[in-house]
Image (cartoon, rainbow, N blue to C red):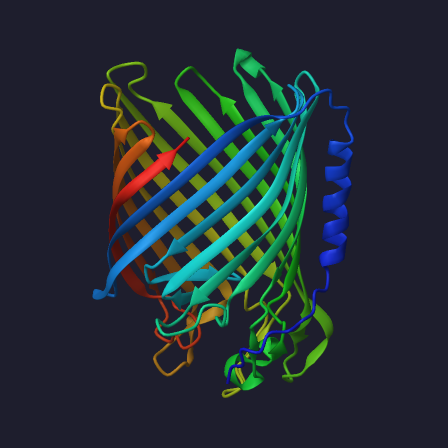
Length: 414
């Protein structure tokens, strides 16, 4: 059984607001000799088309995106970057919520952020942002906006130090920082009999996250460019107790450790010619280590470390640009293999087998755009998704599906 009664708690928000206020006040306290110079940045797109899920047409769908960033430049050292972003997707798809895929009909999201940068030395910069986002999801077409079981709110604040330098005579940039965040699911409520003791009650998906990150960008040669990321995130679930073999939760709360290593290379095959051809390859690895277990309430099977996984992914891409017409063609694919070492694959009846659960997610996409007038471009795109696994029981999570969508419309960037 599910209840859509929202809760009124706002635990954990005060520390984030204090951190947000601290670094924004510190920045704005810097001496300003004149009013800010406003540099408006604007991105928008509106597209419509058809979509299919498991080869069944879901009808005509549309997507929309809007981003406004009126950069406030107070000096060559200090700037504020307020941001407003809104998006809508009408294509039926599976979205990962707490790293598990659930099927949704529609999605809309709004984000508001205040960022800032302060160059305190010739090659050093302090950068940070604080903001919040609200995401609304429909699992069925007739569901009311705002009543979605997995609707969530996200509040965050981050701070980082950047340094520019030139190893091997080539420009590079390194960024090191930390982020605090909290995600709440105000409508989520379920009974233990539905998905197991771990998710019994209310607010069990609410999570506070602490992340340390490193990001780098380096020009290796005149044609070869690299980007790389390292992230370590700790997720604390204050209202989710760890399940024991007896089926009763102990006094320990759930805690997940997530790590990400990612690297990308882009190579310009035809630079500074009538046609530009760039090829890229991104490789990444993810690991999640959770102390949460799972107990099958019907069969009594106990699985320690049920939510642990490791994932490897590859994403090749090709971009072709014609200088004269400014037309751009991009083609890419994303292939990810995830293995749950402590979650067994199941048969149609839900009985566990001897193999670890393995999932594959493959996405292919193509986009073509051409200028219409000024910064207005006509855009058309297609996307195909294949999701597969070695399990036949999918009563709680969506592991196997296919989807296809084609869209056409316009985009504007200023």
